[in-house]
Length: 404
Ligand code: 3PG
Ligand code: MG
Image 1 (spheres, rainbow, N blue to C red):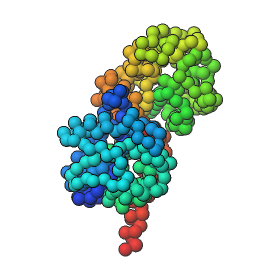
Image 2: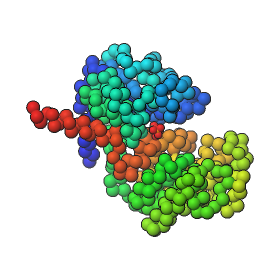
Image 3: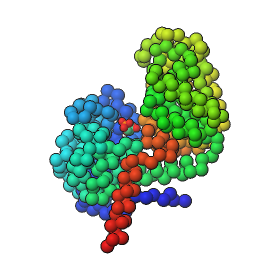
Image 4: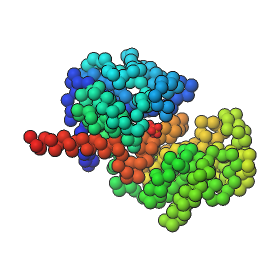
């Protein structure tokens, strides 16, 4: 059954010889200037091919990381992405540094605009900045599902002022797949949420707890939860300010009859480094000099059993510092359990995509989203601002058509 969407799609719009501004999400993981996972670049190839084939002049706009606004900063330049995209498309992709004043691009050509977060007002969704972006184009296409939870000038404001605003194929595919997945999920439904910070995922965790039958937390989030449960966690990555919030979440889970399981054993190092020696400890034996960097084998076994018993699994975030072999076992066991399970599995988020690539299990996950925060907020049932504005502009178009 097709999902009904309330916005215009690219195929509803004529783009021949038009100037088309496309918001993509090229926010890829970089290590020493090298892209370590190009899923997000490849995910936008269909929109680029479609526009080039249709004879549009294509301007690609993206953020990368979280640079300080107002200045160019080579660490956050999209140059590696321009080069990589050129290799994928077998052509040279020009990267335009100053673009707000105008972009020279011919029909059938593709230009990448430098990191939109260098522009003052982007994150605040500044109206004047959004208008200047909109002036660059005849048609605005938002294909950046992964940034759809941000109301910023390039995701939200620009759609208000562009002559036409529509959704690209990746955004449509993500919305359709995730809508189907959450409409009537097979139960029990398990969510695994890892990553470094409780603060960025607090409301997501609250909302997910109301929807799922089990929640497993990993990474820095799990450390804060361990602290909330009264355990010594030494020098582990954590957020002391969020301990009361974590206590509330633990209590909320108890009330719903689905307590959050906490690690019983952990793998610790004495310093945060690739060469750190790994020591397995019972969670009660962690001391003030330890950093927890992975779950231990008994915890991993319990989490894998929870995955095996689930009918729907949502996965966002690794359990430990899986980039370092000695702290990677927990995430590996989890990834293998998800791959082996017959559950409908949904995964999303930058680190999660890297883990999936690392363990080579992408064809054993039912659906992989390019979104991290956007993926979780969508599954929570929240309206994403960049999608809401496309719906608003479609309603405005329909209303003006009725008037004539
Ligand atoms: C993401 O990586 O989730 C998106 O690209 C959004 O990035 P942000 O969290 O820096 O807004
Ligand atoms: Mg599977």
